Structure formats: structure tokens, C-alpha cells
Image 1 (cartoon, rainbow, N blue to C red):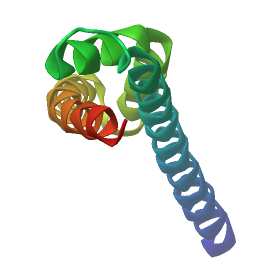
Image 2 (cartoon, rainbow, N blue to C red):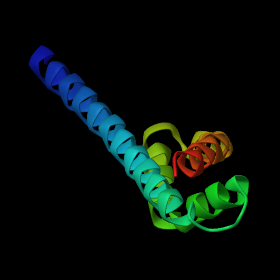
Image 3 (spheres, helix red, strand yellow):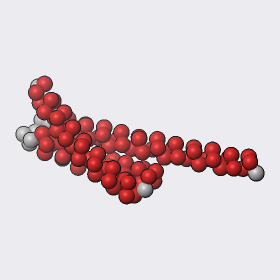
Image 4 (tube, rainbow, N blue to C red):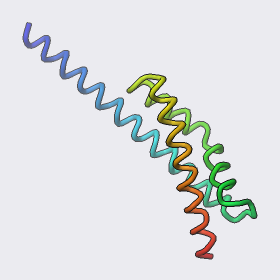
Length: 105
């Protein structure tokens, strides 16, 4: 009986760790996509804020994958709030990066 309980706990902990890793990978892919897109869009004449917002919006599939991974790990409500908050924050940080890219050239 104890071995069965121990095996169940190990399986549960292992699947939780895998879900957490999946969400981290998905979030990293979303940021990489937004960074690469912002780098390409930085050459335009649009404002840095517009460029960063367009870069974030261009990575819809990566954003959806991050939401899905977070939703499986923490629930849909948490995933909604987290993705919305991170999207706003990262849009601002990306705008700063765009300004810095333009100043370097």
C-alpha cells in the first residue's frame, strides 16, 4: 500500500514538473519571437511603442502556446491574467529595446 502511494506521489510530482517546464519553454519561445519581430520592425518609421505592440501581436501562435501551457499548469483564470499582465509589461520593455536599437544605428 505504501509503495503504491509513493509511486502515485512520484508520478504526480513528475507531471507537475513537466508542466512547469512546458510553460517556461513556451514563454521563452514567445519572447524570442517578439524579440526577433521587433528587431525586424525596428527599421520602420513607426514609433517604438507601435513597433513593440506589432511585434507582440505578430507572435499569436507562441502567445497561445504559452497560455495553453500556463492554463494546464495553473488554470485558465490564472493564465488569462498572467498573459495579459506579461504582454503589457513586455510591450513596454520591448519599446525600450527598439529605442536602443535605433540609437545604436
